[in-house]
Image 1: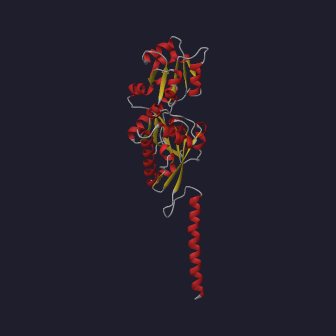
Image 2: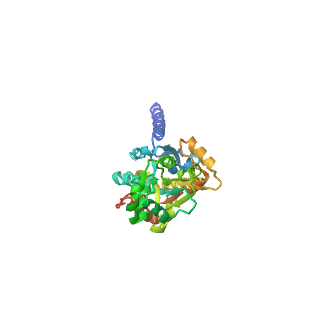
Image 3: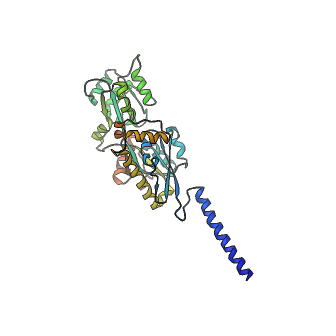
Length: 325
């Protein structure tokens, strides 16, 4: 009788220890959950427009199914370190993320998060056209532009075609939007135009009296046939993609987050307050929020074609193995 009682007690002890062992494992990583406990997923995005895609997550809508999406806004300079396996989900420039995916295979392109939002801004009464801009640059007027050897330069040069070579010497490359603004404001040899993305393209309108706007997305569409270009995308750890429940949860989470930030009922003040609380230093004016082109486009066959052609412009011709689907 004592032996049977001892055996029963030991069985209970082993069972309890096993349960607590699994519970401890669940708290210390992204292992499978039990008994409905949430599985934590780390999501990061660089400050600026990509962080807009996570607005819904920061605003409390971060749990879907058995998954809790813990989101962070990081410095753009830290994106590369996240591809070392630190984050489960990363929003990154599409070309940079594609290169990291090709090198390691540890991440796959899941969806497009931000389409293009680049604009040339200038002063003047007349409408700014591509022909007018090219003519002015050929005549010696200068433009300050962000994005040397990256999306802004490569998209702009694609749009201009053969004309790009004749105007490139009059483009002054700057680090960011504030540097472009300073170039237009300086008294000695100011630039006539700036090429910047949102939110700078809208935020600078009043301070710089910018009345002219040239939409590079419309020009890209006219030349390429695609509605826009995939400037930033969502990259997901390859190991997570075999879990259909996770794929569905992430898709739903991203779609709802994008719907929330793009809703007419969500004010720019609300967006800015939520992102600031999450650590963002960017400020989105009302019109800028609407022009930021934050989207959720899962990488199905049609989206893959637009991404593939865009990456070819970026000098990435081999896209084998980078897509999640």
